[in-house]
Length: 155
Image: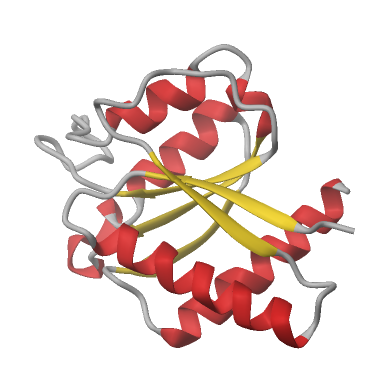
C-alpha cells in the first residue's frame, strides 16, 4: 500500500506552489476519509537547493517559461526552471521519477506545458497531466487520482 506520494516542484510566480499546496490539502482530506489513499509531501527546488540523492520515488511538477523560439520548429530556450531539471538529472534521481506534471498558459498554444513534455522525454518518464496557471479544484482531484493510479502501477 502506498502511504505517501512525494512531489518535487519549482515555482516562480507562485502558481505551482499554490497548486501543489492545494493538492497536498486534498490528499490529506482523501486520506482522512479513506486511510488507504496516500498523503503528499512537497519539496520545492530552487537555484539555492543543494543537489542530493533522492531515496524515494517522486513526481516532478514544472511550469513552462520560455525565452526565444517557438519551441517547435525554431528552437527553445528554457528560462528559470533549469534548476529542477538539473536536480532530477543529478546522480540517479531520474531513476526515481515516476512522471512529470506540467502547467502553463493555454494562450501560448504549442508551447503550453512544453517544459514538462521535454522533461518527460529527457528522463524517459510519462507526461502524466497538465493544468493551466493555478489550476482549479477539478484539476486537483483529477491529478491526484492520476498520481495515485500511476504510483499503484509501480507498487
